[in-house]
Image 1 (spheres, helix red, strand yellow):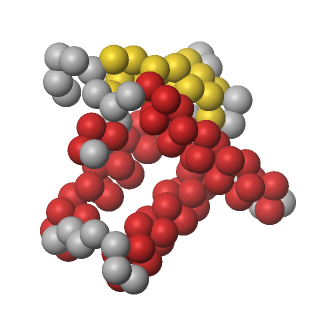
Image 2 (cartoon, rainbow, N blue to C red):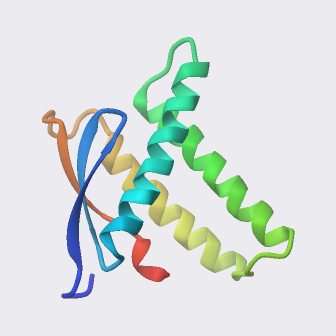
Length: 116
């Protein structure tokens, strides 16, 4: 991560996360609001489910949007690049929602939001 990265506090499903990114804080908060809203919509439709299940479904929804956008004329990325980026995001997602991690309600994570 670049030395000009800054930490932005966001809330997703009632939990605070400190996101370290070189992107503008407003952009990071906008992305977090999008993820929060998507996860809330999914959790309202599920009769039961863990945060991990909700997060995986949200990740799949975002990946579908990305792939449809690229298929329908958006920017193209090499399949290997997409796979590597998705694996990285899923690994970070696993680290965030893994219930065996520390139990306090605040997590610090780095984000791939630096590639824009």
